[in-house]
Amino acid sequence: MKFRDAAQRRQWFEQRLEPLLDRLYGNALRLTRDPDDAEDIVAEAVGKAWTRLDELRDARRFEGWLFHILTNTFISEWRRRQSRPKPAPGGEPPTPDDLDIASFTLFQQLHQPFLLWWASLEEQFFNGLLQEDLQRALDSLPDPFRLAIVLVEVQGYTYLEASRLLGVPLGTVRSRLSRARGLLQKQLWEQAREAGVIADQGRPGQGGSPP
Image 1 (cartoon, one colour):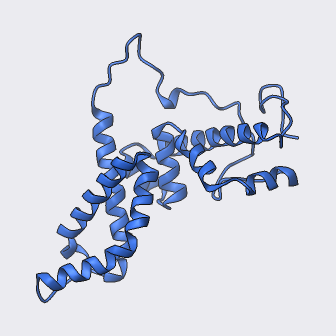
Image 2 (cartoon, one colour):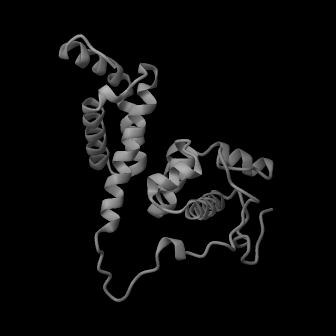
């Protein structure tokens, strides 16, 4: 990108940034789950985009370029935090990848848009879920699983791109996605059971099955 002077550069940047701020914050909040952290991530990403604006070759790609910077900014901070030692009194707790959810198979598979319906009543219930209910289920996932779902299913990164962003092998991304989908199934099953849509017959794989 070439500009006549600094004033034109700033005006161009601000005009394109302003309509995206709400979505940037919403995306950052989905990643961080904390309003203050989300604001910090947005501020840092905008600052990086401003200083790197000359690297943007095609003005039409500004939006995707900016959101990619936001994601990279969050992932970098998240990975720094993960690298810090975390003393665990009373012994080392199991890592998220140690969680065993293989027995919970509410659906044959789970993919965007997240849910596969099996009967009209259940379909009506899940279609009626508020956005915040779905977001709450997503937020409840342990970070490694949640980030895999957000990157691949929500933001549209490929498995390979997600593995590079997270700094883990491709197979780990696939494993975390599979486990994240299972945990989401479990959360939504509980919501349906509490709402009385599904009879309390036990979880699938534990003596009960979907009606």
